[in-house]
Structure formats: C-alpha cells, structure tokens
Amino acid sequence: MQTGLSLIAAGILLLAPSSKTMAQYCTPTYFQGCNTGVEINDFSITGDGGTSISDLATACSSTGSLPFTCYRDMSGSMSVTLSPGLAYTITTNSATTDILPTDIQIFIDFNDNGSFLDAGESVGGGTMNIAGLNTSITINIPTGVPTGAHRMRAVVSGDLTYPSLTPCPAFSFPSGATTGEVHDYTAVIGTASGCSVPTGLAASAVTATSATITWAEPAGSVGSEYIVTTSPGLPTGSGTQTTALVDNESGLTPGTVYYVWVRDSCDVTSLSSWVTITFTTTASSACPDVTGLAMTSITASSAVLNWTAASGSVGYLWAVTPSPVDPTSGWTFTTLTTATATGLSASTNYYAHVKDSCSSGSAAWVSTLFTTTAIPTGISSMAQDGNFSLSTYPNPTGNLLTIKVSGGEPGAAIALTDISGKIILNQSISGNQQSISLDGVPAGIYLLKYTDAGHAQVVMINKI
Image (cartoon, rainbow, N blue to C red; front, side, top):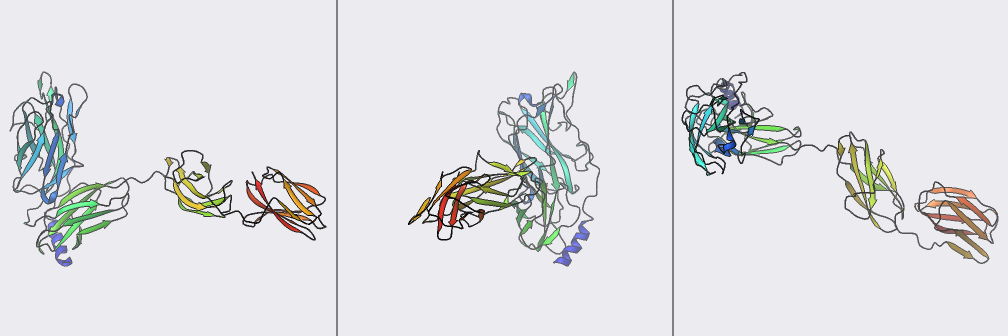
C-alpha cells in the first residue's frame, strides 16, 4: 500500500489548489443592523465525514454607532467539508424578538477573489421563520468548482430581497442597508474522486502536549492519510499514511489550536476529499508543581522536608499540619529545597505541604503523609541510685537548663543528643550544680546523658 499511495500523492498534487493571496473581504454596515432582531442567532450544517458547523446562540453582533457593524468572522475556527454536485441542509433562526420577515442567502467565494458576486457563488437561501423558530434551507454545491478551503458567507436581511441579497451590505446616507447581519465560515470543497470520506473523526484525551485522534474508514478502504497542523488551510500535499484508525500525537504546544485532516484511499489510484476537525491543547500551569517531596530525619518532635527544585521558581511555601487539606495560612516561605519542622507531637500523623512560586503566580499544593516516632520509654527527668541523684530544671525549659547532682564522683560529663542520637553539645561539669545554655538549640525532645566514674543516667529534656 505504501508504494501505491505514494504514487497517488504525486498525482493528487495536480488537483490541489495552488498558493493564493489572502483575499480581503468587506465588513458590512447598516442603519439599524441586527438591533431589530434581524440576526443569525443559530447556524448549523453537517457536511461530509461528520464535519459540521454549530454556531449557536450568538445573538446580535452589533458594534459601534451609526453606521452599525453587525458581523462575525468565524472563518478561522469553523469549517465544513462539502462535495461538488451535492446538496446540504442548513438550520438557522433569528432572535425571539424578531417580528419582521427575514431573508437569508448563502455565498461561497469559489475563486477566492474577495468577492461573492461571481457566477455560481450564490448557493442557496430562503425566508426565515419569525419569532426564533428554526428554518431549514438547502444549498447546492455546483459541479466543477475548485477544491480547497473557501470563504462561506451567510447574509440575513429584513429588506426581503432574496434571491438578490447583497453579500456586502453597506449603509450610506440617506439610503443603503437597513437591517441584517453577516456571518463568515469556511467551506472545504473536496475532490470528486468517488471515494467515500472517513467518518467519526474525533480528538480525545487532549492535554497540554498530546491528543488522541480517531476515525472510521468506509467500506473498501485500503488505508488513510492524516495531517495534524496549526494551519487552517486545506493541505496541498500528502499526509502520513496508515492502516490504523488512531493517531497518538505528542510534543504539541500548550494552549494551541490544531487542525486535523484525514482522507481515505478506496483503491490504489483514488483518494477521498479531506475531512477536518479542530482541537485546542490545554494551557500549561503558570508554575510547575513541586516534585520529589519526601521526609527524612523523622523524630518524636521534628522532621525534615526535602523536594526537587522547580524550573523558574523564585521560592517555595511550606507547612506541616495534622490535616490533609491545603493550608490557607501559617505557611513559611523559603528559597531552599529543604525545611525542618519542629515542635511536633510524638506518635502523630502529620501532612507536609509544599508549593512552588514563580514570577506569574504559584502552583498547586503537593502533600505527603508522615508519622512522628514514639518517645523512648524508661526515661525520666530525675533518676536516683542509692545516695546518687540527678535532677534538671526547669523542664520543659527555654534557653537555660540547670543540672543538679548529689553523690556524684569525679569525671562527670554530660552529652545532649536528639532522638536520633545526633550530638548537640558535649561538655564536662564540676561541682554539684551547673547551668548550660540551650540558646540556638531548636525546640524539641532531647536526651541528656550524664556519666561519671560510677554512674550513668539519661534524662529527657523538653526544649520549648
């Protein structure tokens, strides 16, 4: 199939439209415009391969002052695929406040010269129902018209001149266009090869950088071609050939409109017309979320948070709470990727919360659960051994701790460690009473280990 389709692609280039200069289309003006209810409130059409335009509940587009502009240009975002020689139904209505008879006429600029006045470019129309009731009109695509994407214009008027509505209404004092509105869309005219077009073309699982494209092939298909592009114009070359019915796109740009084009090959010499849809990738977060959040050095009263640096970050907010709910206050700002939480309760579940901040805002909170350790058993603030006694006060203490010893022996020393065994201070003591400074020691639970030539005792210290 690859060889056959390659030959087809070479031949089909002869049928593809050549590059053309972007035509300039007039902007309509009115004396009253659509302010009287003479408007295109709904406009819908279904074309080949399930392609469609569904432009609903748009109401009056009147802007400015006299002369009023009543115009919506949707040619860059709404398109439908049509085939030469076929008829299609358009469903439309005007405003519920409209009590005037309203005519509608459809034009397609097949030669792309910026005018809808050439022979064959008026493709249908009629008189619309009043008071917002739906009206169905038929348009007929002439045979032999050029393939490609062309401007399609819907014109409504309260002047009741169908089939002679002007495609470019203009007001000039004291005469000219009085009431009406104009909408522009795109009609994609396919090739009349005899191949049926694919159906059910759809985009799903759309993210900031990826999307899944699916479609169904008609009976007798030997493969398909597809193109995914940011250009709304009809493809002028071959697409990617496939016998699958799915395309998993990746590496897309966030917040971008993409156009999907698919056509079928019904044999080794023929290709159908293109069918098309659009989808928009989601916007990326202004700030990336924190990753790699983990807890280390967990004790009965403290824990260390660590996370991975985020690109473009100017700092981070962090908090440790008993609740999994995102903090609304009480957080701390840091430019580091680590933080230490202190003053925690032993054997308690806590949630660490971190979120990134950047120049345009902040990301979402990222959280993780951890549990503080239990306080070691068998430890008291006073331990006695015969004539020996050791006491500490105040306990809990602030920045000064007093140690009182009775019945001690030479060689006395104390060591202060945290629950994990890390030494905070280590010094010898003399006499029966001595005070040590805990200035700079973080709040938490610590172990004071006393030793002398004949004794060894451990006292739990609560630093507040």
